[in-house]
Length: 104
Image (cartoon, rainbow, N blue to C red; front, side):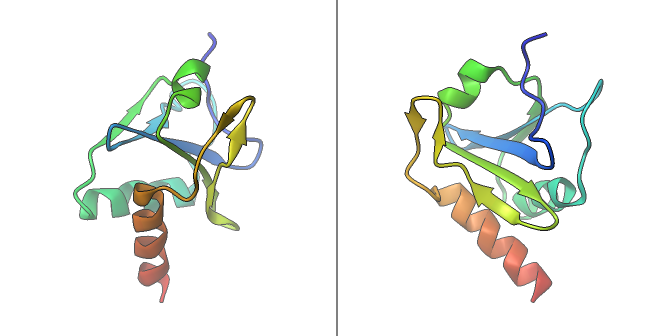
């Protein structure tokens, strides 16, 4: 269908106009433990979140992009094709701090 789902061992998140977005995993993909933790922490931080279909173009146009899993935590994406992000972005940093404090 042309939608982005996840990495081979990680969940995808992007930020656009201050909204945290992660792909809907209704038909395929694995909703990882860290994905659930991030969504929970985002809610606690008062961040707007959307779980929905995501296109490749949308990822390339995102303000921030990161991957996650329970081994790496939150891993900012620096480059995708010709797109480069200054990483980590503000919301990515807030979530990294929140998750780290939760485990401390």
